[in-house]
Image 1 (tube, rainbow, N blue to C red):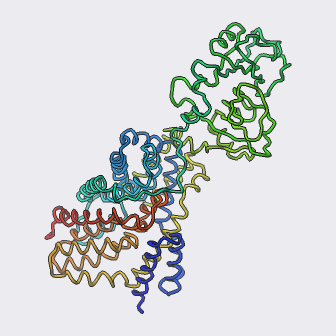
Image 2: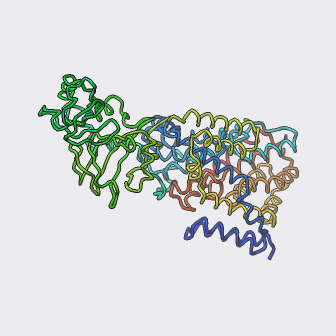
Image 3: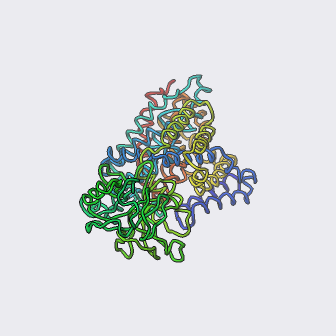
Length: 611
């Protein structure tokens, strides 16, 4: 059996296993690469060549840049803007996400757009009470269409432009691709708006993070803080001034007003003072009472009032969570060293300066009295994000919700947002200008995110989807084997020969179908490289201008809509959307037919057949 036939058999078995979906897709991809090696279709260097491909490093870098946008709050801001524009209806939400994907992909490539917009789209879908699976497939398909708007939208565009220049002496141009790209984006939007609801599967992802977009509201309700912040009894910190009449009095005897209860006292450095301690300047009395009574006492006794809840809950809706400070829920686990430590509402922890807003025990609020912590107690603390983040590494306490995740979803445009925005703009400029190769631009952008402290190095490593990269790398030897063994030509040459000497439009249609079919299973770059020489020979036989067939191949190579392995963007949305291998083709085949009609109709208009 010929090498070409063997490579196609391995491809067929791989696709069948993907469709059956009984084995992890990564295992199938690695198995296919090993099968090619043992059959002698690829050498050892080719087997592992995928890991060294620039596209792998480029995709990894794009994910780091995307992580920087999310960590800096740009993603949260973009999500809030998109939510306001999109509203709550499925059609408007999907349309808004698709327009953004189509606009971003020609700037940072289809894969960069998918990586950057997945977290935004998930957040917007949740706020509209939609499953992420309803919006992520349209995101990937719109990014594919948008990649045809500029030269930098896809590596295929660059290959096509170089081939056109070589064959005709005339370049397609940076924005020349938009002549066909704009109609395709419009068609994609219209088709998904009309039939997407019926053709996009409803799936539930197991890998999505919890939604914290309404975290403050939920916490305020659970800890009953809203009532305390209005006219009810709440906690205050009274700072003893040097001229205060309470100086020299014991903590127990300091306050005699029956409307005010003394919870506890702390020194300037946060040490909890005994009830017999005689107050000194800079000591703090933590009291519970009605605001008017506490303020009257403060005036009479020369005390400075710090309203621990009301000051932060009044006025702005998100005053508990902002660029500098946030809140965090903690639970005391068994054997914790925190057990037995004092805790009460209004307490400032000496260890990290965090303010305790509330303490709950067996669903009862015990904030208004001094007590010691017990196993199972829940605390709500407030303070700088750095101190809250440090709690995640404390083995003696359980953090209910990651402060890092809460901050990313609730704080738009954080302190590092200007730096992240500048890095993004520079990266896009490098990609658009072609001053450096795309992978270099991506790595520069990713490195800058760490260098300028938008991300830590640990966050950058965590941002890379290693499973997705391994899957892509494992499939690259398949493209190489099909190309080198002649498997692609085994399919392509007879088909093209059939239309040689016949209608030019028939040639364009066949070239589109051939390229699109091959592109579902091997990279669109490899597909373009395989079909271009065949298409040029056929075009010469039929008398069709080279630029016409090249643009058809370009569009068809972007029509990677039927399988998750057709393009990294499709793979990027697979896990967050909970999709299976067979979920793509239902909507994909409808779009592909529409793209075929638009391409065969309009390409000859903009790039005439006769040249």
